[in-house]
Structures are given as structure tokens and as C-alpha cells.
Image (cartoon, rainbow, N blue to C red; front, side):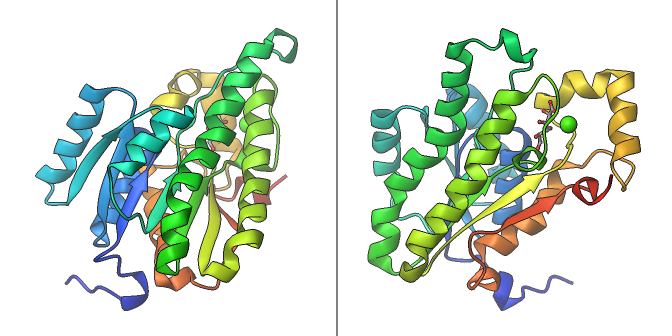
Length: 253
Ligand code: GCO
Ligand code: CA
């Protein structure tokens, strides 16, 4: 039985997800597509991107690719100019760089800022004029449990994810009267390539499973529900919120 509830129906909507040729971005693209959206995936590497697009097409979804580095203003503008009207933007592109605080160079800090903060600002600026003109839209910023808490060695990441939470609130405040909802999703510890080194470290793996009340790592497809909710009419009066999908880790001491 395949029931499509109207509140969660994304048919006729076009969603663009940055950094979505793999990992959580790819899983969310598949999730939005499964609710009926036409999805545009984005990544920097053409080959990886087209493999991801082909995979979704094989599964019967309407998918296309948009190559481009969303930390660069001109590239972002040009890339978005080619994809048409965007109803849902998911600012997902992210990187992790782990090192002791004193070893993070100024260059690392700038790269983290460019990726996480400008990487959400520039695509938003590219789609907002169209959303305002058409009378609405959805922007979803992929935050993190680290929008709330820190961990040693990942201070730049924590800083940027905290900023992304406040970007979400600030944009929601300014754009809500255009019927634009800007919300965040805050993943806990998920089994992705970005976290491969952590999963392969028995001490860290034990830390995650002991510390997470659900007692396991999240599976990428488990972000789909939150993504569909925040992309759909079900969330039309939800604004400036971060929905944590974390197996309860932020609720527990
Ligand atoms: C780390 C991890 C984390 C999370 C990420 C997901 O080094 O602790 O990379 O930062 O996996 O925040 O939300
Ligand atoms: Ca941590």
C-alpha cells in the first residue's frame, strides 16, 4: 500500500540539495524524491555526481545534476541560473577537519567558514529572488548536534554549525512574511564516509553507541522523514527551528 498524504506530498516540487552526490545529502535527495519531488543533486566532481544521478534514475526518480562549488559566488550563481525554479533548497554541503585547537590554521578556519556558512548563504541568495516572486519556498540548513555541543578536535566545525543554526533563525525572521520557511536538521552521529575514521576506531564507536540513547549510529535514510517534513506543506507554519535527528544524544547527559 502506498498512501501519499497531501501534507507530505512533494509532487510538482523541485528540490536542490548541495553536496548530495553521497552521504546524508544523497540519502535526503532520495527521500525527497520518494515523496514525489524532482531533485537536482550537486557536487564538485562530475563523475561522482553523474553516478549518483544515474542511481536515482535507476530507482525510478526524476533526478538531474548541477556541478559546481557552492563556496564560490560566481560558480554558484552560474550553476543555479541553469536549473530553473527551485521550491526547496537543502544546504547540506559540509566537511570535517579534525585537529587540536592550536593546530587549526587560519586557512582551515576560512575554509570551514566558506564551506558551511557561505556554502549556505550563496545558494540561498541564488534561489530567494525566485521564491519571493513565486510567493513561497523552503530552505533547509543541515546543522549538527554540534550546533549545540562541542567535542575536542572539532572546534571549527562546531563554530560553523553553531553559526548555521543562527543563520537559520536570522533568515527565518527576515523571510517568513514571504511565506518562506527556513529550518534546520541537526543530525547526531550517522554512519557516513565523513565519519569513517570515527566508526573504525573501536573506542569512538563504543563512545557513540554508549552515549547515544538509541545505542547505535544513525542510518542516512533516517534523515528522510525530517527532510520530507521540512520540505512539505506539513511544515508551513514551522520556521527557524532545528529538528535534531540524533537518537536522543542531545537529551541525555
Ligand atoms: C565528529 C563528527 C561529528 C558529526 C556531525 C554530524 O567528528 O564528531 O564528524 O561532527 O558526525 O556533526 O552531525
Ligand atoms: Ca561529539
